[in-house]
Image 1 (tube, helix red, strand yellow):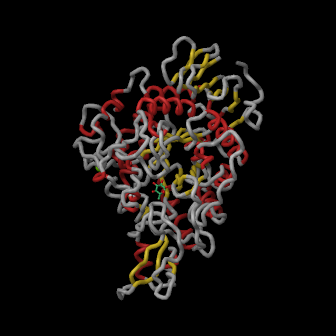
Image 2 (cartoon, protein in one colour; image 1 turned 30 degrees about the vertical axis):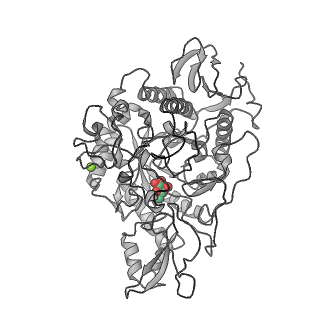
Image 3 (cartoon, protein in one colour; image 1 turned 90 degrees about the vertical axis):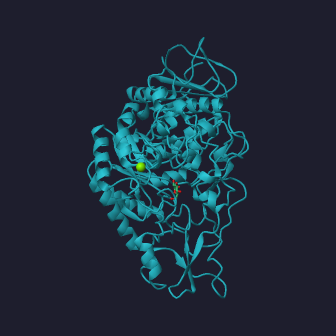
Length: 580
Ligand code: GLC
Ligand code: MG
């Protein structure tokens, strides 16, 4: 087994593959996603809040992350768990007050943690005053022009303007009633009916949002994760569109199967984007936002949630005058197979580095099945469909956790920036037994129970095994019920316990920093066979065995192992970091 200067012969490019250069903190950051409703609940009402978050920040500092990204805590009727905003410049009373936010931010900064807010510009809540004014104003008025209102088709206008289907199921159009009670125009909503799409061709909308950004930047946030950053602009004329039959739906984007289970051969040509995703006009918006952030001191970050394909297209969102980083969903959805992982890592580093942006890596978030379950599924599970009591192909928990630990150990050794979703550091699986009566995701309702949706990854996380709601709060209330046996995943059951998932994450984050892995380069190592991912990054050799047969380890000091190693052999579904 020798260190090669050329990478694995199956791969087209030559090593090493560096991360982007530049000194901004976000190029190498590990960003921890806090899902406010489910993180920590200070007032015991069953929904997490800002004071709860503040009280648990020291635990995140100990974990060794660089920044937190908070899913939306703005004023909202909570029809889509806060991704339906009715006032972008206020905190929802569920989560606290603006003062609570300021205090939480100050505490985070005092602990050396950056804070990223989640901006939701594609749509507002239907309760937002802008939409209420639009409804109350005549057709064709400037108020109506803030949103996407259109006349229906047919003699009475009772046919929707086109055939587009909502990401959450059902038609993408809703008809409104005029003040006199007669049926009126239709409005577009890519997501729920309670989330009308804004008209981003309208300069008024653009100005309003730049002001909103300044409101939070003035308060001191370190940047924004931008929701649905591939939406916003729709193809002129809003032509009909029927998604191709093949492929899985990722957040509404149809990706071809090669993204989910890439072959080592050339991937098939990507499917063109639907007329409401990834339109060229969107980039102008991000150039404007870039300039807003650039006027502030410090390195503020813009992170794109852009479900487009292939990676070269995602990279357009992070060109030097646009956003800073973009989630790497192609990586997230890569099967637990070595050739596919090597390919996507190579492609990611190439595509992002080419535009001067860091590659990013992510395995879980609040929209997908947790990776401790996803990596061991034995049946297809399209993105957004979720896993519930009646789903086929449910994973074996031990296999899932073992793979998750190996996958994270691999991810955190890669150059660039990584995301961690709350609870994955505890090894939390998806909650697959939530009763139907507890479900909250609009997907469940809009598909009439055909798709379980995303509640299974959103269950409040366990902190202390022996406290009510496992320490989530003091009353035991929980907006989604926690599985009775989640005490075994509680943080206090793992702190200081050798081999626990929490200790594995903590060690990985410390070593990643000490060995400058995030600003390093991937140099593929030859000779380990098709089921192994092996590379060198700085002074560390990373080997992940995804095959069934144990792999002989090279000489060197094992600094990290996702499972116990004995006799110099790397067992199945295990990753090691070796200094040699
Ligand atoms: C993004 C969010 C998701 C939300 C949707 C609509 O995909 O991550 O949770 O439902 O946008 O805002
Ligand atoms: Mg609360």
